[in-house]
Length: 324
Image (cartoon, rainbow, N blue to C red):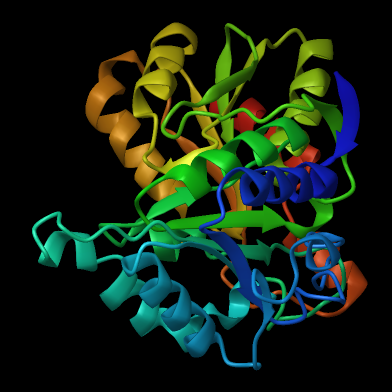
């Protein structure tokens, strides 16, 4: 398989699905000739034209509202919100319309739309352009939430999201766009609700999302040097959530550390911890530990932003503390 960046994998997924299905189209701010704020839609305007790669006004409510209406009418829109932080402008369209229509119409309406959004800290973009907000979307019945950590998963999950008949929030960490990995040239899908065990281990389970998957792998390598075997699990999607894989791992390792870049309070890790505790409490040798950001806006200062983002040392310390 060829090596491709996360960004190239996303672009290839969009291109192949637009070629396969004329109902697929893209809309968002600067997605046309400019190629998207981070370059994900580069080349698609030239290939498919303005009818299928549509630049919109700087109005998130219009972007998501138009996508919802188009999806209800039989198209398959992929809309881009330039930064996930701006999604608040379109919450009614997403939470009350797209997420509810299929239920409220007794299953007769389908809303096959994807909302792509970059998120995450680490580029000095400050408090209004750096948040990780996956927990918001997890709380809404009717949505699906994908959060890929690798180029392979980015392409496969995006293709699966475009083909899904339900609204999918597709979250891309900005610092992952440049990472490389093996990605097949042909189209393929990655199943929603199926976690990946990215490193096997016997002594502790690390569940991590997005960029933190790579941080957890770094921590696992450091723990191995200390004689601690860490299993690393990437949920890949948060709705649906593959609790079974996590529970199975905890039954083997008897310990769980959950890692995400979003603030700890009421984050995705809290739901994961609760579900594992409900299903595998008797297998835990110690309380579940969460490693996440402090409950504060993302700082603009480089040293403070670096302190805000969890790192491998934080995970190693958490594992050591948990194990006594």
